[in-house]
Image (cartoon, rainbow, N blue to C red; front, top):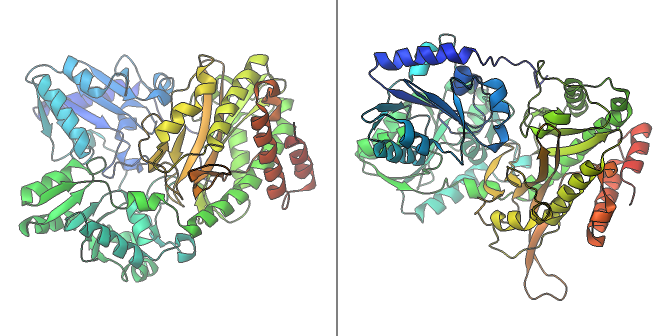
Length: 604
């Protein structure tokens, strides 16, 4: 229904397609081209017609960049994809580089010939990204050149059409605040910045501000569009009008002026002629918009997307909705884990069947709208690939003595879920139990953290990794990302990571996903979603402290827990969590699953 397991990525195609791209660049008088995994909105999920990086290279990860020069090419990926890229890409054609440790700017400085014209599509790079690229290109003695049309689109002869999925109003019961009130609040905030208008380019911001949802990209209910918010409270939505039916128009007519998507350039020119000051987010806004505004005479003021922070701080209705979604989701996951415990030891379950069964449990009712991402269903060594995506070609059996990692989630009208559980198939080794328990210790450290207002995710990330660091262990991804309310499963600006500098605020939802990955062996990850709680007193304390409420409800595999490694406080947390899971999920489960849950959540 929601996930397919085919793998159209063919590494050998990259050889011929890179050659065709080079021929097109030569015809245009260019010496190289940048191909990001991005569309005009810079989001994680992009529609099929914007999957240019995948079409060219075969790589289907959620983040990456390729640079094609006349004599060499490279593909840049982060630590989640170091194994995946070598399986999907012809590495003799595209040399893999680490996006953080070996950034594109350094590669350009070292490899771009002096005098070379390196081209980019200004719709597919942010303002900040272009500034970094230009600095590197100029340091190499070259010239960074924007193109009016993307040369890759010229050679991609069967490129899909842009999406035209219908827009749906998002009910007030779930949104918790009328769109008109949100726009008034945003306009008031805009006035304090001395800007006349704000450019909204992120579809999740637009979906949140106008209380609408769409279906233009996989797994995230986004209506791809642009918007302008004016200080007087007037808003304009630039959208392909084929996406709007009568119900959507009736909803939007009360809060926004609807204009064709192609009117955006004209609207930016109008702002320029009037010498308006326009707020843009340089981290997310396409360089094309910045260039157009400046050329028209507008003053561009740089700042954060005005929707990002208020969208991240969920209101009471949104928090209540996500609690309900997690209760529903927890029952589905528990039914799956009970089924897995019965069937996997027989040796006849594989990764695809497991993912399909889990999807089936989630979609048994009519509440599920979509998965929140393609399920990561990794057995044995595949579990060590952080963002592994099972295909018909990689599908592996769940074997006794191995670990199985399943990372999944659902999109419901009232909330978005994301949960990972790692279970043992049969008897676990001493090493597996040791590593799992150390991951659990870090997970508990985040779940029980108390911290003063102003504390950032980066501060918590370092503190909680200590259980792994003391054993010389670590993992190459963040500890937590923000999550939306029937929106993106990866939401900013909040996160718990080395780069998570946004102070955590009440109502923010973040993941808590400690992990450990042994290449060629197994992967371990325990992930729950948390909501940040308001400051509250601690008995005997002097300052009010914030904390977390765990939203996710699902058993943690006790067969992988080495109790001797846990403190008394950690044991108490695990027992209390399991008691809560047992009490919350029991109603609505069949007798067999309920009996399994009783045993799976027993006190240790």
